[in-house]
Image 1 (cartoon, rainbow, N blue to C red):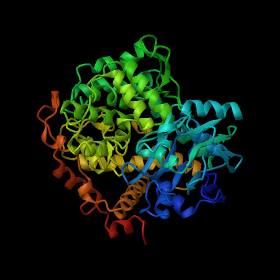
Image 2: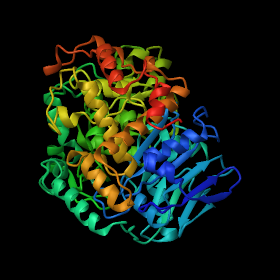
Image 3: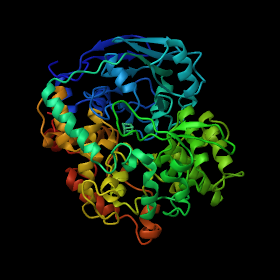
Length: 601
Ligand code: SF4
């Protein structure tokens, strides 16, 4: 292949037979879909969209992009792409840390797993080869002890991407963790690994940064991207809000907008938000602020609990999403308990956003007397910790709740109390207060998600322009731009937070210098649009259409609180605007659009 940046080596691992084969990347696919998310969805599409998520036929793809493991800032991301057992859609979930870089340094762009092993195995990756090795002694272990055992066995530095007991037990929102605490959290990727008896991927590699194709261009592209970060009020190391407080810097400003869903989104302002905010966590619990490969921002928040029942616990990372999901949403105002619950998620391998929502749904079911037995009351922190254990182990009520928020509410006979879209629970921005997120959650290709198109950048932070969070007009068009831009950066694969300071120009310059192929800013947006439409096409072939681009009734009929106290979501109007911007017909990509984007010929 002529293109630079890539290792140009992909491993296909058939877990049923144990066979491992190697191939090069199709150059045309690399030009059209770039890598990571985009190329991963293409591999999934070619594998057939109609497979059952937990069947051996489903593919589990660990995907790098052409910038992964290079000097590019924030280039330590890896995408796990599969068909989700939670949403039945294609999904991609990204994780930071060093596993992505180490996979590239070990000589791979992608590992594609299909089939199902008879017995638990892990994949050992080193020097351009993949070997399957027995994992009987690791099965049943949590993430932290699995990492420790493998590091004892192979020494450090070593990257381990692994599932915990939740993935083994088929919890529908099980995640895959690397570096102990960095999660490919959403969509149930860990449940797919568990269904294949794949415990872990272990990578041994020394640093070997790929060289740019054009060194002169690279120097200037790199400096330019770095300067935007250093000049950013959000990202600047040691002074930017994200660098100082982590993502939980958002708790107070989003709450001020009336956007922090409280008690399962029955209200949208939390009176104890300050107590669980990034500012309080920094003041009372922070022990260090780790980073990922090639990132000067260092937004991760490691905390140490000094008193109370969880004294001595050291964990990362106390982020905004779990602080909301396991805090305000469950009426838990104790950041030490939030830290404990996140640590349970990291060790069992579960999505903290889904866990918070499934617990808050269970609490509302208790409040409304929909459950038999004692149930779980708002703010019962001990009960929350116990319920998290039960879910991961599928014991007692945990077996019911392990099915996720939407299925769990359905089983209580009250689907209306599930704050979920396409089977996946909502993140931390109440859509009645942030209308960009309303259309974003409804139309996301992987179920409710803030990261498909991060419109709070505009509505909260004024990036690239400030828009009124309560206004719906124009948000469909704004969302499309964010979705397409992120689909490109997720395909490079750069951290989503790069978009706080970089745009299509900066992405194009870095791609061009490392890969050695010309690309314009407009073409960046076209590639993003292509990736987004391929995902939608995949979902359409699975039976999804505009009727699935919906929101929980609560957001359409019940007002929020504070500034959102007279606000509900104007869903029909927003969908019409968004579909017009996309050129879709009732949520379905027409053949003419597929042809225009070269998805079909
Ligand atoms: S901004 Fe945060 S999550 Fe993103 S690469 Fe840097 S440390 Fe990792």
